[in-house]
Image (cartoon, rainbow, N blue to C red; front, side, top):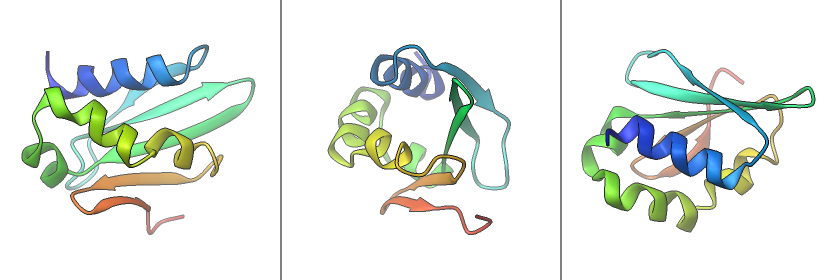
Length: 93
């Protein structure tokens, strides 16, 4: 399974009832995801360096350890980025 599908599966498991849409590449971010439900939108993108440094089997554990979903859900309407160093707000917010 490719890393995009691994991450999508993780998000769908952690955010039941949300529609999860893969976003197109932006610069050094091969993809991201938009999660929506009842008018609420959450966005997270993944830097290429993060994806290259971790295999698919460990990505879910890293996202859980870093509390990515919990953090993203605190910033409705903001765009977050997963980098090799952790989660950060996108500078365009």
